[in-house]
Image 1: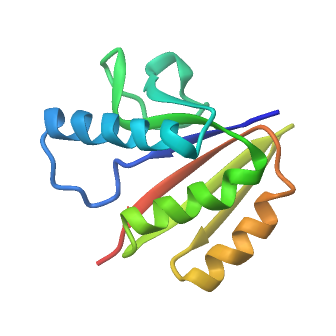
Image 2 (image 1 turned 120 degrees about the vertical axis):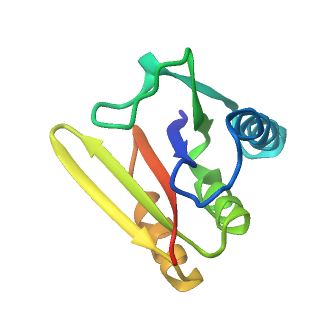
Length: 132
């Protein structure tokens, strides 16, 4: 069993042009595949969860999808934390009409969210949101 995670970098405060964002996203996909996720790839427009930001290209800039073993969720979130430690991580989880949104910006909050996420199955989205 794996959990699908959609990672949205579009609000992470990255100052990259579209080509640089694609190259950065591909590098992150490779890092995820190396030891964190069973599979990872750039997301296509038709793979976006309902209500997520959409783009016009076949691949959507700054959005990745990873299939993660539930035991590795903490590692993936920690890895994301290290990518953008000044960003708020916002996790949105939807199942059977219920939506849960978790946000954190400090490592103690991250640990609490990891414990909560151990109870989640299915698909969730993580956004990195740069604060001022």
